[in-house]
Image 1 (cartoon, helix red, strand yellow):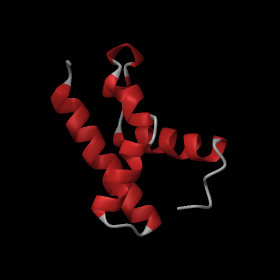
Image 2 (cartoon, helix red, strand yellow; image 1 turned 45 degrees about the vertical axis):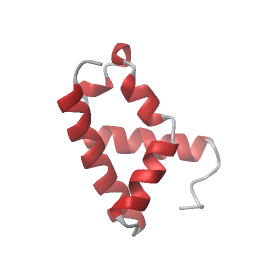
Image 3 (cartoon, helix red, strand yellow; image 1 turned 90 degrees about the horizontal axis):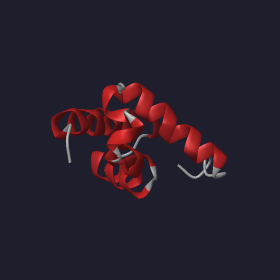
Image 4 (cartoon, rainbow, N blue to C red; image 1 turned 180 degrees about the vertical axis):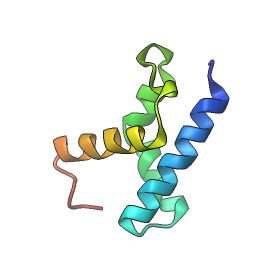
Length: 74
């Protein structure tokens, strides 16, 4: 449960990036991020994602969408 502040800042920044790129409300962007596996990875302290930037987390989110074939559904 460590690194809570860093994770909160990362999630907030990533939500803002998703909303801006895809023209979504912050609420819809939040829902999309939390529905992805990226937040699960962020919750695993062993991945070290809490030490990355929001831009890195956003790129990971987009990569996961592309691999799942969902890049056009946003």
